[in-house]
Image 1: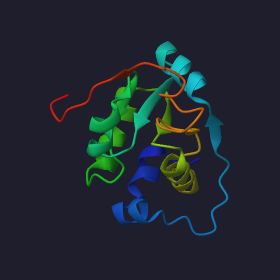
Image 2 (image 1 turned 180 degrees about the horizontal axis):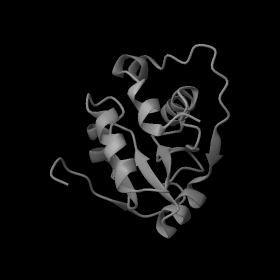
Image 3 (image 1 turned 135 degrees about the horizontal axis):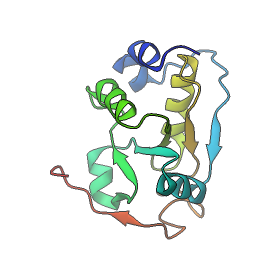
Image 4 (image 1 turned 180 degrees about the vertical axis):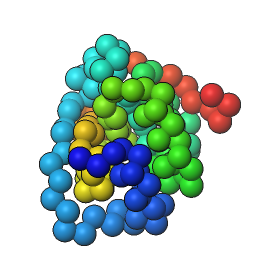
Length: 144
């Protein structure tokens, strides 16, 4: 496995935005929302909501998640800083329904970051998403 910083430095915003996965066949760890919630509470993972600010405002974010939009131009820098601030914790990604988090996780793993988790069903998936399962959320604003 590549050093996570090297792996992250190989990711460009264009690749993330376009989901340039090519023929990569990375194995992705997929967890349900309850497992992700419990692991974030216990400190085993760092949960990252990769949706957009508009989506965070509309639905709120998971109470244990960090809001880090994957389309933000500073995503790689901010993601690296978040990992550095949480040594030993596996990053887990959540989006609206699991599509973007699946793609991002596969992209990261194809670049050598093999310890990532995709949170299936996301925040809004029915019937297994975060909100549908009644897991706690908090409001989001650009100030927090």
